[in-house]
Length: 171
Image 1 (spheres, rainbow, N blue to C red):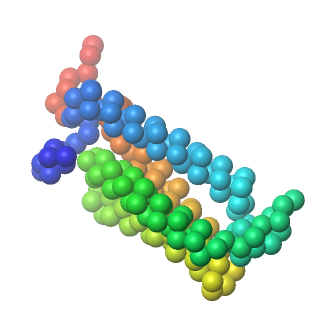
Image 2 (spheres, rainbow, N blue to C red):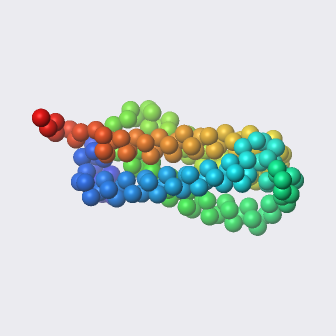
């Protein structure tokens, strides 16, 4: 972690072993995102009505869903806040170690954080305030997908497809 504190630290300049570790982490996050998509799309659904039924109770396709209990929401929020917080922290650090313009870095970092925060809060709002907060959850999912997608794609490109500074291409 000390390397991240060094001014001008770039992923493309790291040793191959470090890049392999980071790439392994990014691949595992990608698998996590794929399973998250499976849950979101196939278990819950993307329509506001399906999301409202999932959290408030009602018909979801061919099945009947009971509203999520206070305990279920607390357990999910607790788990996601800790786990996704750590994943966000690592991904954001890897992203910061790329040559993307600082203004774009800030936008993506805030977008991903807003998506995560919305993903934590929206289920509570859907369940206890109004079904229309399903739109907030959908927007949060989209923000997460964009933010985390950039967090993964840019470091991979930087580590494996951009030459380190000063390296002469082979002839």
